[in-house]
Length: 426
View 1 (cartoon, helix red, strand yellow):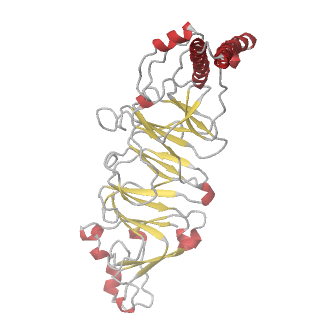
View 2 (cartoon, helix red, strand yellow):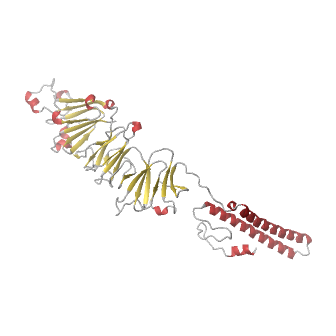
View 3 (cartoon, rainbow, N blue to C red):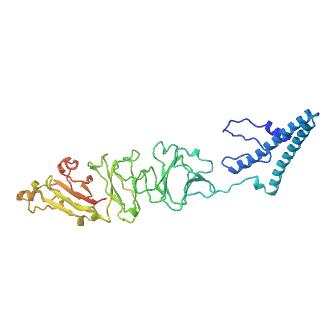
């Protein structure tokens, strides 16, 4: 009983919920952070000592009762019984610990067998798994030894991991340098060693913008990368005029194939310098990288209707006069039908010769304006088509009727349209 008394005399005071220095319990190890089995074993030992302390207190009460009640036989008997019961309880408690440790120490020295992780994203130290968040602003918050991400699944989309060299999702030199984006599939892991912060996302179809070199798998972007984009507009500030490559992820199952045109102006519907049209010519290919980006203020994103191009519409007509389709316009006409456009049409405007059949115009007019380059009046779009009008590397994109090309930026700024792309879209 002296052992139990000494134990409680030398317990260190602690604050509730802030225990950092557990009292020593002879025969039982102190709890280890993150180890459930050591906590269980420690609590078992602690309860044994509590039972011993209660037995000691009960024995003392019985002794006092026996001493104070010498003239009362029933009280003497009650005190003696209390003392006997206390001694018996203490013997049973100690015997239980000794027997259990002798027969099988594992009964009191609890160990846990890690269960396999279900589908999800986890921190892991190898055999054990802890659920991981979708982002961590400071990897120092991760439990020591668990600095590896594991993607557990039997099937599902690929996992993308943005690894930042500094905390709070910042690259080197407080910008976007030193960032890497890696792609992982089911069952794969990724070490977070050297990363100050990270975020994760599932790969979806769309267009990913990258400030460095891109690849289809592995380290898919050596630099800052956006989430998937599927709409036109100005680029994110981190990538505006700082774009080096893009990664197109098509959705083959839904027959969604992405295409994009980059502009050097913030409004993609106005005219300006343009990058060439980028899209996967192999429509059975799910992912493709393009590294030849030289303008990147805004983008026009479209769904290319390659396989079912006939469903996009009946084509487009090009006229020598504004509102050329109106009866009073008396305009020359060049027509493209869907069979000519097919999945993608490119033509030089100098070869787009006007037909004046049934049009009452003087011969001088017809000789002066023979093709769409010489007289760009208007365009009638008969369906879902994207029209890209080029003047060298200068372009403007249209998807609806252009009633008067003279009022558009590309011709108002003195540019002559020399090439046109017509793309069937969804």
